[in-house]
Length: 212
Image (cartoon, rainbow, N blue to C red; front, side, top):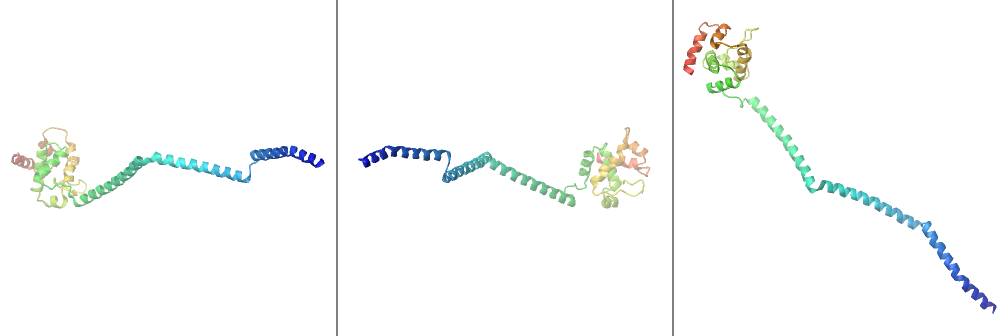
């Protein structure tokens, strides 16, 4: 009888103990994470961080995009082409300058064009002067010094020497015609003493009659 009562009492209290124990475990598990839970939380946090980084990388990739990347590549190639073209043009310019292939040959038509191109007044008179001074481009001063107008340095009395005959045309303006202020140009040439020959103006007029 006594044993029956003890067993009955144990059965009555047993569910309460189990329930209390289960509640304690559940409570502890919520507020006090286990080491495994901590590890899971850390791994989840790391995954979230990596996910953000990947999204940023994807965003950057999308920002550049295939089309934009193509534009960047095209711009880079265009810059390289421009630099290469500039170098090539500079090289060609240097070669032409050295060889003189870009400069016109000394002929009457080319000389006349050059006189006009430099804005020189009375181009036919000036053309006649060049022909007369050089003996139709055969004088040594013309051939060796490229000096078409017999221009001399007033300080040394020597003929100016030019790299090309076109420089001599411009020198005619800067050293002679810039002084002209108007009036009869042939008479003005005589007044400034352009040539020592007293018949110089008459010779120019005769040559003009042929050129005209």
